[in-house]
Amino acid sequence: MNVKRILIVLISIIVICGVALFALWPKPSIEFRNESVLGHTVTSVVLEDWTLTSAQGGENSTLTFPNGKSVQAHWQLVQTVPPTHRFDIFPESFFYHTIYVAPVQPGLVDYINANKPTVTYYLNGEAKQIQFK
Image 1: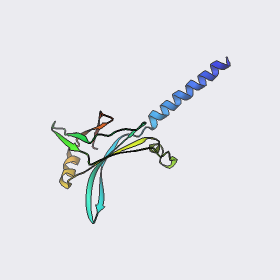
Image 2: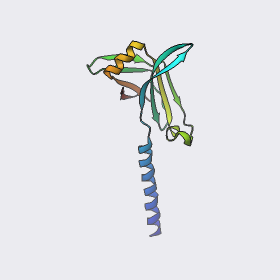
Image 3: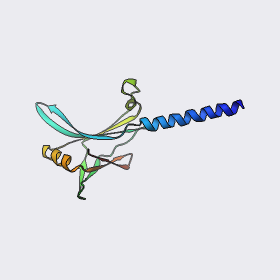
Image 4: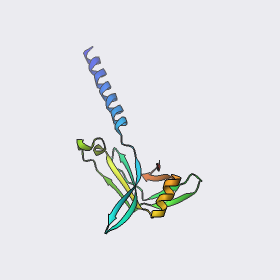
């Protein structure tokens, strides 16, 4: 009887940890960020994704617009940052953080914001999609 109780508690803990991990998993995000470089403002698209293990991000991606047209794009910087395990930025600091950065022409920012394309990017060779909001 005692072994059965310990087994039930152990299985419950494993299930609770699995559900918590799934619920707290950070969602991918994509946004425009402005930086000032030598007095000039540079706009970049920044895509962030999180994985449980180290990941290799792909440098190529595709923007698919609602009208069906697609444009090939190239990320200027793709970097994976290991977890820092800091509780002040929980839960993101407990996952590998893959960052994609690409500079964007100012006129293209307005076009992207108006049409909200879907971006197909690659993480560990697997195609993933995210849509501009």
